Length: 520
Image (tube, rainbow, N blue to C red; front, side, top):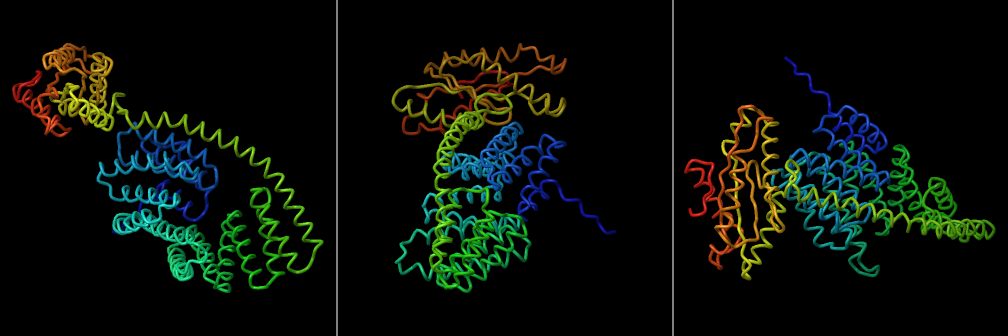
């Protein structure tokens, strides 16, 4: 019996719109899907909407949307969904040229990918990192990262992801070549090689109907042909790119292609054709960037001068000066917008920091924050400032999940985290380090004092009223206690102290649970 294929998901259709250059359609479809999306679907749909917004030039709105996606994803405790949202956040920050927070978000996504064992997500995080390195001029590092990404995604990525990785690697090679001095003997052969690679890439992208990538690659091929002296080829390729951009409605990209064509035509001595191309490019830029319009009108004025038409040259220069005056005003507006952008990023950064260090279910520190705090405390212990570590494991927690359901189990975890907060004093760090496992770092060097704290928490858990979760529910906890001065200085490290605390925790369980062990 023939199996009817499942209809494509909203997310996959939105991705298809983005790859085909139908960006507004992608944004509209994301909004429509969000109206009826489930809790687990919303972060991914918001991430895709953010991609569409950023690609259409609405970077700050894209950043806000990606931040919302990350907040929702963090509550799901799913490292893959959160990692995807962080990549959207990183892309938005890259587009705003905020590479430091972008790299932080991408690095966090990379850690989550490793935690989940998701090679595809890991590779896409590395791709974003490689792009930042390339833009920042770290060409060798960028190429090394991106070449590794191409290999990883060849077996662990979708077709579109594989092509995006290859595009990013080629783009990094182009940037590295652009950084060479104009008289460097390596320039010409490098651009000739890039021309071959960009053309082959564009043909492959076209064969797989990856229209947006095809057109971007064609434009790059045209530039490489121009810089390698292949003017006729450059003109042919740029004409194809301009026509493709016109078909997909990407006016800004079409304008750039027309202006590059005009430069090539002028170099070839086809002055009237160059003037027509500049004129088409200017028409496409109408209402756009004053800087681009100023440069286009100046280039057109030079073209008119080359055909000895001073009247039209003067008129074009006057238009250029109009946009230059507008540009001064625009620069002032841009400076104000840039300030607003930085203030918004600073405001959003508080949310990113909280999400990075907070366990989303319980609201106490997560494993990442615990590891960082433990490293600081160990450094102090090596200088004689000792501390205590308490490790907790809720007894028979699996039975609670199995008999009452995960929602009830989550309520138990939150309630126990509240008990840890109640015992908290200045300098203490309660943390959820995984599942039903918790830890408490205490800046005290007395084992007896630490054991008393542990005993109070054990007793509070045992006598707590859990009946609002289930009438017959009782919860107990086993605890292991260690003080840093118990570990010989040469071995004092996170593995050693956690291993000692875990050993005592499991001894408490072996002895019958619902107890504190500080001797095993």
